[in-house]
Length: 510
Image 1: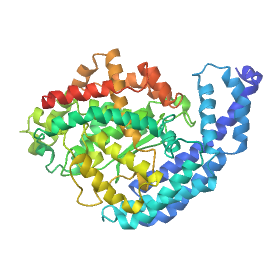
Image 2: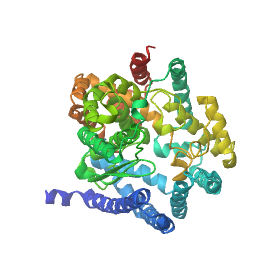
Image 3: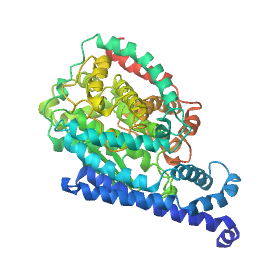
Image 4: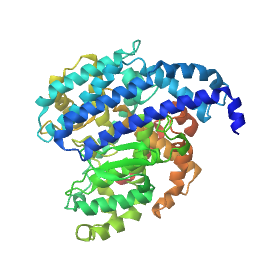
């Protein structure tokens, strides 16, 4: 075997590329670890130093990746890679790294370091300002973020819309015009459903709005996500302001959650959601460890997995029938006299609400569309940051028929604009919702027994199907390529609309 390798002139070149990429990956993992610590345990006074540390790591990582030596190695390897089967690991690696490299060399290293430092300081300022309902202190910070976001887009001239490069970072190959078409069709389909349900009395969710001690909520949520398949030998769960999943290696994929003792649904469904993201990452083939292939492909596809587990599985009748008796046993004083049907209707309550992360399946996408439209207006210069809070309240009243009492539950509620760029983050949530139903319908077609298995607390068949068809590949395929491989076609709204009509048609006799 060693002799064969010595005879292959590409072997040493490929190994040099992999060695360089693994070193860059290590820097990225250290950066992620500092972000995780900032969002969980870091004391507030550590913010300034943390911003500097993140900027340093960002600069080093960028410098190493845009090194002309990387480009030279790719030039040497590409003719060889083109002769290999398209989906082999090495050919896929070279293809993906070339795409990443061409993108990275357009962004100045100094800019990346500056933006990284700004984002870290912005996050810390948001964590303080949101509870205090203090948009004024964040306005100059957000104006700077908008300026950075425009600069970032302008490093990629020739776009149709200034948001296109930012969207492309998250969902490769997608443009603002594509998102607008998808959102327009979805809004047209959703509006009659939302209207029909809104004309009825909302489900009674009083059973969820009692006092549920934090320790027991965390205990139950951990039991559930462990049974779904999240591996705690390769992960852990902690509390944070805004739940997220992060990965430092395929052996260390962490989730976070937040707990409201006066509302049962917050912790559990945050854990299932982030667990869905984490199971995707844990399901990537270990052979890809440390290389750019070892992560999920596309924000929308990643979100499809969190939404599939959180909503299609976690809010299903079958799931409820299995887990609710265990929940009653854990909280007898609160739930022993609450019928399963009452609880099931409560966790699937449809009602226009102020907070995106608390929104039900039917109205959730309206929250995303609102944010996406604001991002386009901000980037285009149609809307100024100083006018954003009032514009938010006005649009929210138009779309939801209500007005937030303050900015804390208005424009300050999401962390995204205060921890990264403005543009490209939100479309993935709705794309994920649509894809979750599309993938699940394919899983059911292959294994009709999945629903009955969920009713018995068995999730291996579904998780194995997802692993074989989606998780194991990492980034070997682009989002459009993987969707085509799994479903036989492009993104399709029909399975998602059919899912919503079927589930909520039964609940609300539509």
